[in-house]
Image (cartoon, rainbow, N blue to C red; front, side, top):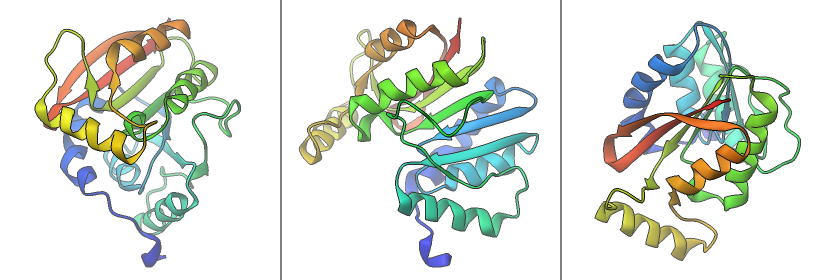
Length: 200
């Protein structure tokens, strides 16, 4: 299992800042569905940080599923569930209901269809007022883009033309079409944002 563990260096750098935001936005109890959990290090940390919540990691990549399972096996955290294989862009998800959806660093390293699926899936799975929490880099019409984000966006599009930093306005419009409104915007380290949408 140790060989299956993947490491995402950014997770160690951003998890405390994200946890501070989650502490303000998460409910007192319930199920958090994490979409695109990647290595599983966020899930491991947040499950330990919020023991009153059940944390459900997921990812479409089998190697990510193996990594999450390996981290979970060592954690002993009773509130960290076994990972599910979940493709955000799929029309059906293996989870029918959740109290929160959390998604970090997916939108810019996946085709736009994954973000469309994330919002559509959240509309199916979340009840009224439940939060959809999205973390990552976004361009904002009213704010000059950081040079580091412009360079990052260019490098992403060179790797895959379907990737790239998304515009916050496009995400808000998509969310609105599915009955969500932007409730909170948090500025995060390294020119990232945490956006909290709640279902009307």
